[in-house]
Image (cartoon, rainbow, N blue to C red):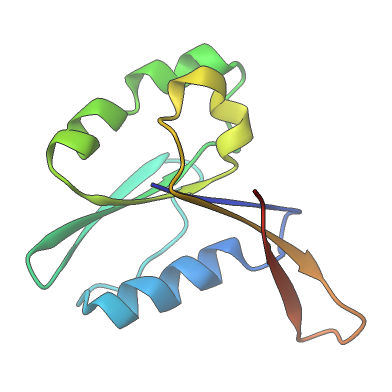
Length: 112
């Protein structure tokens, strides 16, 4: 369960694409902004990309299927986990992406 936070356009989905590629997913990871959840297979391991940006309240995250993802022992990459409140399971890692002085460079820091 990995959380990815940061401003719009800071590279969260791009990082998810790189992670999925590195895990061997055949499909290109795309932003689930409107669908909220996308599912990929990576060498037999389920990978879920969840985007909580459009949630109006944290309670809407109740129906995203986090419990099923955990039962599947999936890799779960959650953009904007703070918007899901208590519904998002404990994060194994949480990263914040931000802009740097160089336009094509992003900074990544782990949130502890």
